[in-house]
Image 1 (cartoon, rainbow, N blue to C red):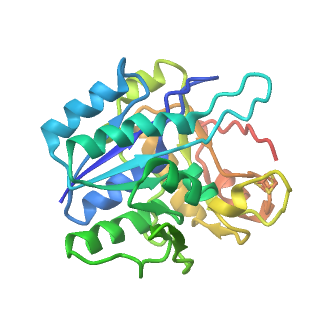
Image 2 (image 1 turned 180 degrees about the horizontal axis):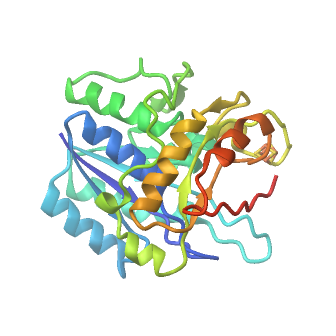
Length: 276
Ligand code: SF4
């Protein structure tokens, strides 16, 4: 199948964020044999016309809209990012017969509302690089993919979701080949860091936090040796600013220090910038 993944985030403050999730999803879906393209709207002048042009060129069977944030969390200067979805969804519906799928961290927070707002067919609640390829496989077989854990949909206007368990880090795939999917030079020239994720979940229960919806309470860890290999590989490709984007860095301490201690010196200088 032809699958187009559209990264809708255009917010550049304080620096543009490299869309690791969308790139991971693209790479995992490509590994399953699909033709996959990523349209990153971060730096384009006109998102709707860029999307129209891509739809004509690629003629996708499935379009995934990757939504990073619902809003900017700023009560004094609020910006509602979810509103960007409406014209994009309308364009996809008017130009194609593609299945329309929502994914990204924001979707796991408000799946029902975003499904209703956009009229999308499906929403991904679990780890996208696991769930989305399964969804694509199911759709390619002409199936109704309600048996896939991590998928949500509207059934005659009633919100449904499959809450089955989704595993991740099973194949050690921590970072995608960013160059394949996005304009890395555009990001790096604006001081973006290269994100790496070493664990999911958080056992704290801060009342304002949405991580429990996106990653759950239980920790899921990547092997520290794989983390080190990944960092060395990124450094070997010339990436110098690599940022741990785990929801919290330190807890639990025992998981990170093996990675840190294993980094070779002086080739790799480790500078920790952690909030928790
Ligand atoms: S991710 Fe941070 S804010 Fe959220 S529950 Fe954990 S410690 Fe609290």
